[in-house]
Length: 103
Image 1 (cartoon, helix red, strand yellow):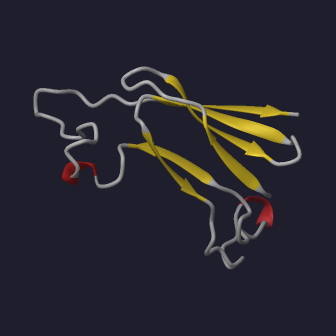
Image 2 (cartoon, one colour):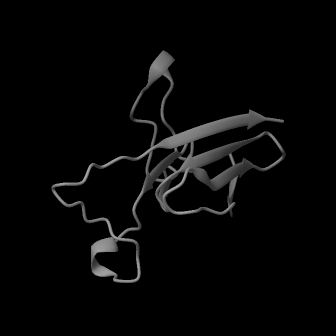
């Protein structure tokens, strides 16, 4: 599976398309709508087939990927990043919506 990354734009505090992951060859696209601006992209570089999942399939290197929406890494130490500090009187609310399309 070959993946390219393309930023589609985001607006803080509102659900908006934040990232699009497209598969080369036009096989499909994953769109992510989120409230937070940051995202970790994990591709499974260190999987070696030793872990077996559903249906007895081994998790090999690059057999899948994970998109985790979050605040920017190292946010508490960067004054120019949006704050991730939650006061006791505040309620934490976060939403992420994944949209999959093929073709």
